Length: 370
Image 1 (cartoon, one colour):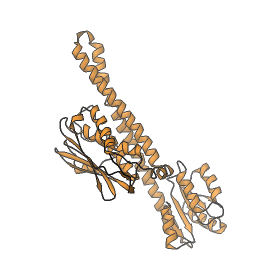
Image 2 (spheres, rainbow, N blue to C red):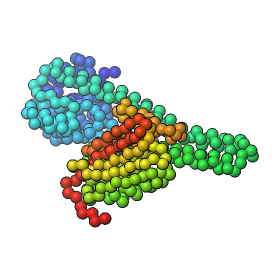
Image 3 (cartoon, rainbow, N blue to C red):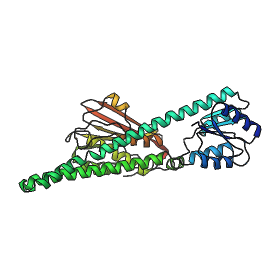
Image 4 (tube, rainbow, N blue to C red):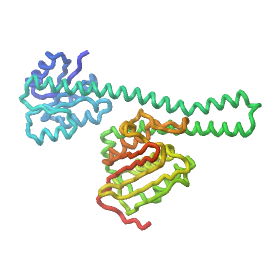
């Protein structure tokens, strides 16, 4: 089945000319004389690519592009502008608005076809990559959820089948392991749900615009409390050491996402380092950024593993019942990127791992007398 291309152009002759070029090249084509008509057609037929004029009565090309960007399931449809406005600033503005390409009138047939083919091929590659990610993510999550069930089911069967021959201490130890597996499973489920919700929010243009307006002013006591709460769950409370900077900086990030960052960093440090070894947490100001550093002594990561942090790759872990899928660090990368920050990992195999997050600081700070 050939790809469907929607032409949005108020000039009938131009519209028919584009239609003829694309039809001759084997594409299926639909026409709309204005933005409103384009929306009606798109909602019914879902085009593979949109070619739109900019200057049109009623809904112009920029407004039509904005509609597609906000419309669920349409935000990834390639969108090309075709306009007589050939000034460099107009082209730059169109591309900055999110258009995939910008062709100026008059145009050559070969130029149009080449641009259309390029955009459609790019879309196909994206769809294939996304399908692979979905498949890999599903496999990773299934593995993550099944693994904690091993001790739960295994020791439950053992207690049921051999109850009369087991001592109280043996049963107690097995129940503790069962509980640990259940808690771990609950954590995996909650993290998977959280990742899905975060992915949805961070890929919604309007949600991101709203998020980027939020600010937080975390005190050192807040960071210490968040870190200690997680460390206690791993019996690592005494291992955590703090070197805190607190000058009242206002950070360009929401309190909710800042909390997620701290929780994930301390959880990662606790999981992937030996009990009894120090976990160092530092905060400091680095020019226009607020720097958060978590350092632990553990197995470490290779450079290849660091480069390969994504949703479906696993990290080293000494405990077979708490494997790491990389969900936490992948999630952090996505969050930090949205707020204009950076995540960096430095690690040496068998020695230490240092994860640092840079979050932009608001120009003004508030006084903090704590």
